[in-house]
Amino acid sequence: MDGAQELKLQLQSEAIADLWQEQCSLHTRLFELTCDEHIHLLASDMDELDESIEQKSIVIKDIEKLDKQRQALVKELNAQWEDANIFKVNTLVEFLKTNGQHNNAERIEKLNLILIDIVEKVQAQNKKNQVFLNKALISLRELKESFSGGKKQFKTYGSNGVTRSTLSK
Image 1 (cartoon, rainbow, N blue to C red):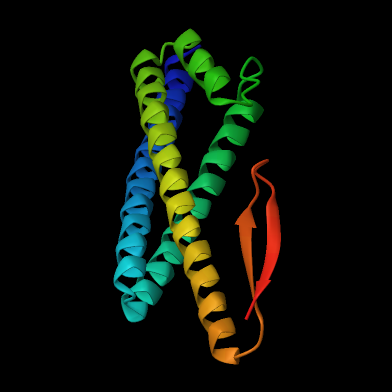
Image 2 (cartoon, one colour; image 1 turned 180 degrees about the horizontal axis):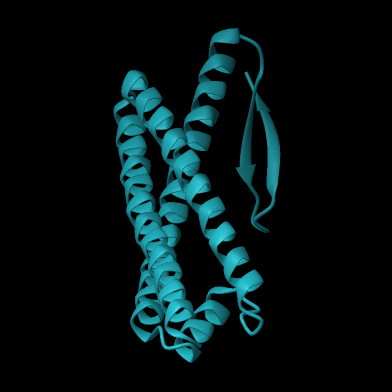
């Protein structure tokens, strides 16, 4: 590899590492907004909840834009370097290390671990938010049924853990 090719690869690998760092920042922002969403749900603050959801949507679009940039850079690497064959983070890191880009390879590796951790936290918080919403919807349905004045059906669990229905007035 000559000096021009080495410089080009260094610039490309730095650009990819910078994208990974930006992904970490955006996912951190997404996590913060997801936590805010939970707080607004608990407080029944619908205006703030709407704002958080709108902000989350913007962040998600920014994440998608960065991912398209990352895909384009990887496609460019695969086109320019016969031995690249990059299709996962591991193959990207290995390619960069093999071609003298140890610092950027290690940077991407570390940032990817951080990104995975943040994504898992976002998923867990989204699950908590969904559970809260499901419980709220059940409570609203039961409240609505209690105002209807008709027979109300309660669901309880039998000794075998299966739901059974009982009617009461």
